Amino acid sequence: MKKIIIGSLIAFSLASCSESFDTMNVDPKNANEVPGSFLFTNGVKSLFDQMGSTSVNNNIFRLVAQHWTETQYVTETNYDIRNRGIPDAHWNTMYGNVLYDLKKAKESVMADDVLTPGEKKNQAAFITLVEVYTWQQLVDLFGNIPYSKALQGVENTTPAYDDAFTIYKDLLLKTKAAYNDIDPAYSGLGVDFIYDGDMAKWKKLAASLRFKLAMRIADSDPALSKAEAEAAYNNGLIASNEDNFILKYEANTANANPLYADLVLSGRQDFVPADTFVDYLNGLNDPRRTVFFDNNKTPYVGGVYGSLNDYADFTHIGTGFFLQDLKGDLMDYSEISFLLAEAKERGYNVSLSSADYYKQAITASMEYWGIAKDDITTYLARPDVNYATAAGTWREKIGKQFWIAMYNRGFEAWSVYRKYDAPALRLPAETERPVPKRFTYPVTESNLNGANYQQASSAIGGDQQQTKLFWDKN
Image: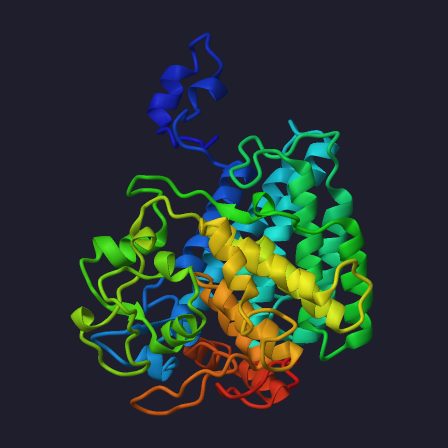
């Protein structure tokens, strides 16, 4: 506990008391060391909040993915990212509020004398999995990043950057180790707000993270991708929406989904669904429109992407996205099913056909959003949706439906576009700049970590929005 500094005169007068001096010198209200579970909770919530936010100061992934567009401003939808300081804000949140808290959480867990070795391994494994998710997101956003020398505080304020593919290979090892460390014979976290102590679901998350990492590198290292994907598949992946990696936000202001602050408490009307997204769904008569969009306009009309839009003239965002207790979602059954469809197309050893996994993925998305069974059946039977008859290559078929299913997961929708080059996105109306392939590094890195920044920029081929990541080969 935190020691209270006691003046010498008071200390002298207490010395003659029979009570223990150490007991008298303890502050019962202020903790010197925060329990690992508290730090883990804070780190995880910070991750979900950052990835789920739509504040243009922090997270513009829904805009970059062209699911939403802006009304009063056009800066972000025209990809003026560096000047807005968006990379800086995201970088600082992910390193400072997420990864640093998770690092300290793990240190606290390992130093906790009350926990058994088995409990420590379980808790450390859970922390590792969230760290892996965060590191992959940062690599998939920037490319090479500080990794092995990061999070050292004042001991190293200018960390070197690690090669992105090297980081990926280490993350694959960590997911494998975490999977092996999770032991149902021992308890996990005291309060598990993700899986409520279900070790089997944590193991599915571990395998699914490994599978996702493996599938991301399918074009850059096919052999490693196949080996890791098949091993993860054999360990058992997320197999239903009950296994999704979600955060259940609460129906109160303090613990509400971040969209509530962005869309409701802000009192602003800054966003409408983008014409890119609305037009694709209209063309397919997609039943998810009743959830994704409000019914203020019939038929649905999307705002012009990258242009000023009058809020009243266009379809609004669905009312469910204004709720305090809208769930946060970072990995789900639909995502894994689409990746399995891709794996089958590549000849990986998975059990079902690509068509079956594709159908499973679309169904999982629709069931998650509460679409009626008959509507799902009708949609899947459409010639322009059915896997056997839909137009395009397997990349185009999977990419289009995958991108739609990642609604409310803007970063993953954008990543789908970058990997599959599908569906076709539009050039923003004002500038016609191409869709970014990555975010540029924070300005603070060029100013405060200049030598390492220059080395990293050179290594990836230039710190530009159009510089492709190592896994983006098509």
